[in-house]
Structure formats: C-alpha cells, structure tokens
Length: 304
Image 1 (cartoon, one colour):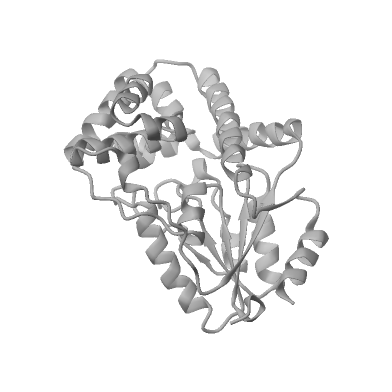
Image 2 (cartoon, rainbow, N blue to C red; image 1 turned 60 degrees about the horizontal axis):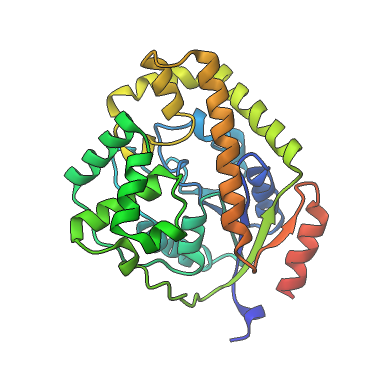
C-alpha cells in the first residue's frame, strides 16, 4: 500500500512549555482527529498541577487518551504504553484518517513510532531500595553504580534523569545482565504513516514561559497537591521535577523561594535534555509555535 493511502499519525514533540498542547488541539480540530498524550507524567490522576495537564475546557474540545489513565501506584513502562497506544490507534483509525500523538517524553514517542524492546519485570524490592538511595543521597551514587554495571548504557543514557537511571539499574540488578543487553533497537514497521513535527523557539522566550508556568503552578496549589502525596513520595512516578523540590521544602530542607527557583532551574535543564533527545531524530520537521499555517501546509503536503 502506498504511504499516502495509509492512515496518518501526527507526532508533536518538543520541550516543556513550548506550546505543544495548544497546537495538538488545533491540529486535531482541523483534521477531526483524536489525541494521545505521550507525556508520561500526565498519565497519573494524582498529579495534575505539577504536570501542566490540559484544562477541562481543552479536554472537552477534543477526545484525549492517556490523560488521567493511571494511578501513581501502578507500574507502567514504555513497553506497556506501546501496546496500549497501538490498540487505541487501531480503534481510532477504523473511523478517522488522522490521530495526534503529543508530548515531551521521547521514550514514549519512540515506543509508538519505532517500537520498544521487551524488558523484564524488575524486583519491586530492588526498586524501593534504589528509590531510597535517591531520596537520601541523590542521583550521583546511582550514576556511579550504573557506570560500573553497564558502561555502554551509561555512555548513551540521560544519566541526569533519575527514572531512566533507576529503571536501568533495577533491570540489571534483577537479572544480573546489563540493561543494554535487552535493547536490540530494531525499528518496527507500523501500519500507518507518521508525520513528525517539532516545536521550538528561542531560549530566552522558552525559559520565560517555563518560569511563568512554574509561578502559575505555585499559585494554583502545587504545594497542597504535593503535600497530599507525601505518603507516596517513594513511588517512581513522583521522582520528578516539581514534586521532588516541594518534598524537600516540606522536609524543611529548603525554603519556598529556593524550591521555586530549583523547579525553574530543573525544568529548564529538563527542556534542554528533551531538545537533545528530539534533535537526534532526523525525521522531525521543526517549526516555531507561531507557524500554525505552515504546519498545516506541511501536513497537507505529506498527506496528498
């Protein structure tokens, strides 16, 4: 079948706060599509303010999948997302020509567009031990352990991402084999065509948007949201920017002002890591958030 005859998955990727949600909704409305979230933090019902989920109004404009779909107590991997997202897409494509996959979690986008390796389930006791180390001593000892156990993955991985480091360690420690040995990285063929769009803008503007978003999160009740999650703080889903810093504030380790500045700084660093990941994908066509007409033209050109 010619690629133009296939159903179309429009992927919208880019750094946090660049405007992916707004663009995804406009594109979905334009092409009568449904949206799949590939933001791994927006899956969790208990995490709303700190994850910048679409508003109720936005969720009402277009049907969304994988927003508020899980509890933080549930284990969920990129492999799980791959299988579930493909099943959702199969259902959408029975009655629609287009679907939109949007988010900043590069690993989850890769899982849908290219496939992800089947990784073994890790021992929960090992995960809890690694999370405790991270909480008490930070990420450095975990990075050092990963370097010793799996130097190949250590060289390739985002070692500043605690979830990635802990995931690699728990697999290695559970199986006795390097995490990299399970990553065959064979790209899988999909029964739909994929149009990849990247959003980016100048650094100063993006960083200002990040700072404004963090300030709005604080005003909207982020501290109260995190306080309610204190009994669950060791869960992997909560080892993330915006929550870790408020936990430190609630532990009286830092002041509120220090927590806010740390969230802003760590979010900026996160945005840089996201861009580093996505820039490696040569199939992504990059646009400014303001270039909506050009984006629509690009999608139409590839859909003819």
